Image (cartoon, rainbow, N blue to C red):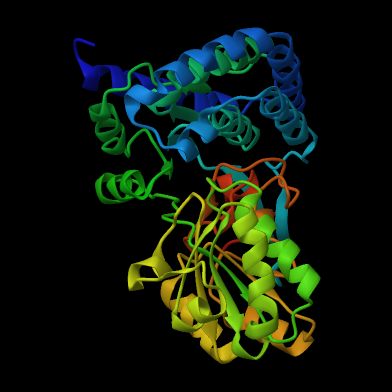
Length: 419
């Protein structure tokens, strides 16, 4: 493009205008758009598959890992799940205008706290084309205009999805620029958008730690972010052995290249001798490489010695760090030291241990006798998510439509004046 900054400013200004126009769009119009979009994506499944294949063909040239290529791939099941997610978002209650709380003051003033859109969301993400549809659906359902900047790895898939959704938006009476896909993969475009707080309300990066750190450092508007998904499973001394095996294998192996997959396993010393070899055998059957402390290597000959860095690593692949701990306290201290505050799980039959764990572990989601893989907007009933935030402001955990809103106070009086 001849003038990249001018292009970016035009996109941002169009988004700001669309956000203003969205205040007049009804919930019924949003539902119409989402349902029509889901139907159109199913009808054009072959077109989406062709676009995705172009991205897959180009993937080796971008040096993508196996985990990244897996994220990029649109299988028929994943393609249909995009449409399902749109339909689920359509079914969610309309958030805008919801009265969150209200009270009547002694002087008769009615004070209401009312949910409102954020405004314009600049969303930067990498090689997961389903995120294009999820982000568009959630942002617009929450009354926001969205600027989508996907990675070059998924440019054909993203463009195909965005075009379908744009056509359906126009038919439903939504503003033309409510959903815009940035038409350049030039990295400088991101910097331009991040310097436009007069048009963009919030930036949301979703991808590798390098991308998120860059956005956090350069953005002149608030950022909702998560850095890494170093998720832990702790097997307490009172863990059920069969349940422990099933949950650990699911947390690690159900899909390894995602942020809520387990990356570290902690085992109470009192149960390690009987429990760890069983769990390790199940993981080794799935070709997972184990990196453990000295006691772990003594019980599991196949395990390799772990380095200090292993306990802080997000592998996104078939590697798991393992450590034997002497107590629940030691497990919690280890997690709070090395965790990225994403998702942690305890497996136990001791209710007091579970309560202690969920109280003291400082992460966006804490599971009791359940897989870390459940920390997901769809699984939590949010319909979909725009990301899983490890921040504490403004949102934490899966970010659905409510996390993409703010509020304002609306006050009704009958002529009261302040004395």
